[in-house]
Length: 366
Image (tube, rainbow, N blue to C red):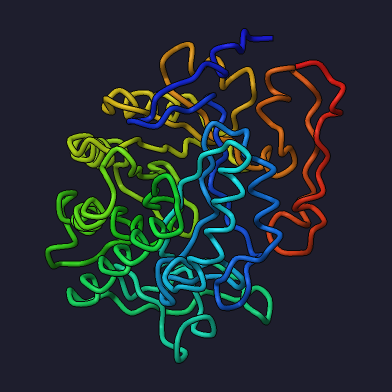
């Protein structure tokens, strides 16, 4: 076994001390109420996982137009704030820390999910070759409207609403979701962004909406309590880029100047295999970031420890392993057997596969 103690050394993320480097990744879930209010059992779910060095919430839409799947939570109305505050309190009571992931799906949506049956919005008016989940089951995503510049300003304002709401709910910080083929990545990736205005064309223009959002939410939160998530090599939700190393190298250089709390990098999607060249690209991109760096995707206890030892990461975010193992840090520290997750209950459902995964026996040694 790779020596793992480094995973359990405290570390500073800005002015926030994390007790370990085993973080809980943001995970899209479909267990909220239809109006975006979190369900009561989410208090238990997140509270159970408070031993993570830091929890990132499930992706949470900043507006009604940001919704892309049934029963995903929101963070733009008072009822959302009230529901999330109970969750935050549960995490804090159990000794944890939690950041809200702010989300807008862009074109990965369906008219039946949006106000007045409106079309989704995106950087483009071209539909994604992707599916989403509606009340009628899986359906092809709807054709989007390309955001006007006025619409972009409204979207930036929506992120401000979400940032303010997250602060009111008591979160420890926020993460701007600019990965996984959702709205902000639809601007970043030149295989999707076909605009000819100030938000398309050059890497500088494609980054503009992200910069405007970060400028705006930095009026609400200290920059060291703001992070961003990127997935340079991802092709999830029908996004592509002609030269991800060059383009994301520019994005990272620019974002690094902001003094953000961290960069959260998706290195590998579930079920995907990363080849040697992709690994080399990720290492070169990592070298461009000067502060706290979080990696996610395909890590085990041993490979996570190795990433920290080698300086490739300051912390590692685990996703599916945290669904099935509420006490994941303890299990990794003891090299204990992990519970196997039930993929049928990863997204929607009841308490089963959500809050009923067993902890290690209390008699197991610390």
